[in-house]
Structures are given as structure tokens and as C-alpha cells.
Image 1: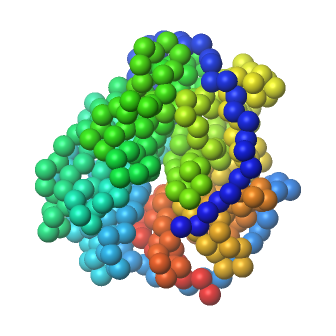
Image 2: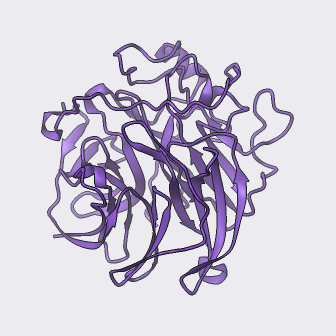
Image 3: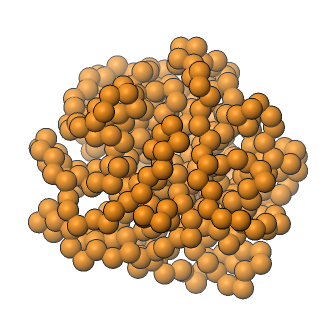
Amino acid sequence: MTAFVLKSIPRGAPRIGIAVVAGLLLTACTPPPDVPAPQDIQMPDDVEMATLEFTSEVIAEGFSVPWSIEVLADGEYLVSERMGELVHIKDGHSTELRGLPKTQTFNLDRHYGGMMDVSLHPLFSENRRVYLAYLDRDYRMMVARFVFTDVSIQDFEVIFESNGYSLGSRIEWEDESHFFVTQGMAGAPLPDPGAQNLDFDGGKIHRLIEDGSVPDDNPILEGQSGPTSIWSYGHRDTQGLFLDKTTGIMYATEHGPLGGDELNIIEKGGNYGWPRFSYGLNYDGTTVGDLSEEEADSLTILPLKSWGPSFNMAPSGLAPVTLPTLGPRLVWGSLLQRRLIAHDVESGMTSVIIEGIGRVRDLTQLPSGDLIVLIDAETTGKRNSGRVVKLTFR
């Protein structure tokens, strides 16, 4: 596996007062009505155009919002569809799997929630277990698992029930027994305490044992008598998660509001500041939160990298990728800009590597070096035009 080595980064003290959530909020921040074309987006000094040449092949189509992909074998995949399906793809033939619970989406200009991440247990070849994160009919984020046998779902069970909704969720395995799952939220930045409320599961990254129970070595946070599922908090909407097993560093990409997208290094018990501080702006152009940057630096963990309102990406998916000419990079999709973005954690340089590809929801690199990307139907605005695409670099 590619190693990404970073110098140590000081950790702020994760101690912020707790407020009370007065019910489930389903208000989601949406982009301003006039979205600039990619060529009109101002390029910051630490962002470069480094477009790569490639050819593309459509592996499967007919999706609405394909959210996550797992590779089972050469030419064989599982793809989650936000509207509630899990699809098995083999040699170009797609089959919707039966036996999943009904999911819930909510639509504020766009669909949120629904069926989100699909993840294989690290010992999948032995136990055939598949994990799902989704929104149930009561708008609560759930994690479930099942045994995938003979292209069918067996022994389905819910192993984690949260007390709140999720705009986006990703699962990442720490080892054969522990995994992390993100639970994204947005809404009006204040007075909703959301992500700062340790009694509310939204705006958090959770760490769980493979059966859904809470590990004894999870952090004990302020006001708690023992460990809970919460590993870190103060997140807005984390839609990319990657743990580098070589270095032990876990990276997360997070949506800001109007700008303020972040690349974070996730630390045990860390408070990442939302909604008390952001490098982005509220959608009316006002400042987010009540903390200055200096105060946020002492009270919370600031991002490893952030991008201001002039380079509003909406990052989705996150994977380590080795690219021609560029080498090892963290790569994700930019939903708003319809680009594929690469970032070098050593130099801090962000690169646009593919222009105009569409709204990439997830990606993975095959042993061959090819990329598989999921592109949703909102790219074209045409129903069921989402697709699974293989990219081969020249």
C-alpha cells in the first residue's frame, strides 16, 4: 500500500461546551443558485492544473446516485445506489440484490441519505461479510451487515442504530475487528449545536467493533462516564475516509458550507470545530461560528488543508492513487466543479487531474492502475444517467 508520510501536527484541546439538540434537523445547505462553470472558478496559488490523458469505458449504467463501490474480483463489483439499491456487477451484467430494508432519502434540491456506503470485511474472502451504512425509514443512520453468498443476501442484521440522520456516510476498516463510520450533517450553522452535541450522533466519526459494539478503548469525552461510539466530533459532512495502514494516519475529506472544504487528519477524541469555526462562509456570505482562527486553533483541531470560498469543491470519495507523472496522491471527486482532484500531503499542492468528468461519488484504483469511478445522474440532469466508468491513463 502507498505510504503518505507527514510531519507531526499539534493537537488542540478538544474541550467545547455541550448544547442540547431540540429535535431532528433535516435542513441541508445547498449550493447557491448560480454555480460557476469549472473554467470560471478562481484557482488559488496552491492549486494547479495537471490534467492527465485517459480513455474511458462504461462498465455499467442506469444509476441515479451510485454512492460507493467495492471490488470483489476482476470485473466484479458491488455498487450502492443512494435511492435504496445494492447492485452486483459482473462482466458488464448488473443485478439488483434483494432482501435489503427500505431506506429513506430527503430531497432539498438534491437527494440525501438513502443507501450510502458498502464495505467488505477485511476477511471477506473467508467470511463473505458485507457492511452497509444507510438511512432507515425513520431518518436514522444505520450500519448493517450480511453474508454475500451465491449473489444473494443472507443473515442480514442491523448492528448499529444511531439517533440521527446522515447526509453522507463512509466506512473504513482499522483492522479485522474495528471499523470507523462517518455521519454527516449540515443545516444552519447556528444555533443548531449538532456536531458539538455529544448526545447527538450526527456530525461525528464513530468507531465500532465488527459486531457493532463500542470498543473499551474509545475516548471518554467531556460529560461522558465511559466510552461511546464517538471517535471524533465537530464534523460537518465527511464524505471521504482513508486510513493509511502503513503510517496509521487517517485522512478525511469534509464538505464546508460556501467553500471551507477540508482535508483532516482524524485523531482520537478530536473536536474539529463545526459549527463554531470554518474557513468557508454561510450561504448569505456571513462568517461561520463564534471563534476566531486563533481561538479555534487552541480549542479545536484545524484542518491539515482547507480551501476557501473561491475554490468550492464539495469533495466526495477518497482513495490513495498512484498517478502517472504525479506519483502517490490522495484523490477525490469534486461534485460542484465536476472534476477529479489529487492532493500531495507532503507539498500541500492540490492538482486538478481530470476536467469535466462529472459528479464523481466514489473511486478506487485497480491493480492494473486503472481507476473505477462512480458518476451520478445529476451530472447530466437526465434520469438514470449515472454510471460506473473505468479510466485508463495513457
